[in-house]
Length: 199
Image (tube, rainbow, N blue to C red; front, side, top):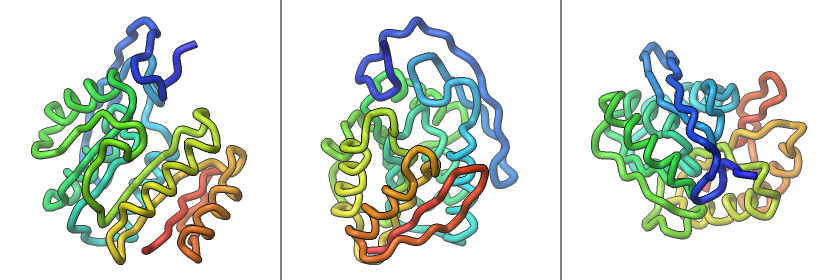
């Protein structure tokens, strides 16, 4: 069976268009089978975006959209805060092609879109890292995302994670507390938690 965390999904193509309005801006995203949340903007991703926009106020520096899928988080963040230096990465080549297409379709330029398993192929450090981690890839993969993200944060940098309570939010919070000493629950809605750690 093909998963959205496969490097080259084998699922037959089923392209569709998703319209979304975030922070007063209209977006359109092309999606396909074999990528995460192929039929609509994922509720957790929307909650992540809205929470970060509210809490950060005016972000600057370098942001990583870790596990970017077809590009929603990185594209929205670049439109909301054009001064951000955005890097988007994913293991899934089909998703990355869509992320490039969607960047152009939503008038987003100067973003780096990289094929990478976690942060393995991502260079440099970041002021913000946002992730909706691939829960179905297993706990080891999710925790590796956290470890690598923590290592890649600049001093004062923030890691935001969205995760459903029933899919392991309490254990994710515990892991992040071990890394950072503290882990804040910034938002809770419809079973989703937004977690934040600050380096």
